[in-house]
Image (cartoon, helix red, strand yellow):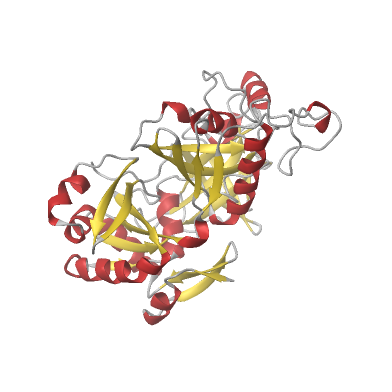
Length: 405
């Protein structure tokens, strides 16, 4: 397994490790429940260095990303970020990612750890293919009738004027999440830069000085709480990790592993690739309003997504991702069948759980599941089949938890 630059620091803190996407990552340090509650009440410190960092640079950067991704990246202002998807020609989701606009002709993309190499390869291939996007690639259909078959390949030299750099191996990513995250970050930056932290908006970034180093500081998050992410070279990561632990010691900052990160993101109704998102799903089923049909570029998957929208996929046909609130004490887990309770379909399987657990914050079981659209109205009673024992749930709007502003 790959290790982050902070692996030794995690071991010193007594972390239990797990394999996550080929990376040796801390699962928890002491109690995952304590770590979960710390993020909700004070703050948690996360090592996210397994995530990818892919830089797109060149005169065609904005146009290229508008062709490669489903969102309108050209409309993103410098210093801002946007959540988007990279899809296959059939509309299936290759990955969800965040794109930061560093400059007019420069973006930084942060894909999921397990998909980083796939995303980097797809971006490189699409950059070489050019605006037509007609070159067959590993992430698109290969049948002879595919719109990306080599029969209509773009001519040589027709690619976008951009460079795609996968910088993941050299960059560490550290996050501080929780109600006192801003206070902790402000305490470690240069004194005359605290205003940069305090004035930083959601889904925005800036550059700050910490210990003499220039660090990219973003304010996004995957926990449902206020939070910050810090991008820096691997050789600077250990010093920053220790500095943050020291700065947060009076505010009950604790190091946190992937276990509580999963329970936090589920309470916040945030999808996880491999659970809620996959190549078998399209954005409309997942309830992600991120596809821009108003932009002029013929982005990869556009035709398929237009057809899916026209047929009401995820709205009037097929399945839709919903939240399920447990009415009993037992929680559903990924893959468990969801059963109809009422009407002609009573007792029939109408979906499947993608993620589920007892909510530490709310005190009852929660789950996300793909369910046939006719059974997705809030308040609808459904059962989750827990190994032959149906347990009662009801459909509720997402997210389950929303922090006080």
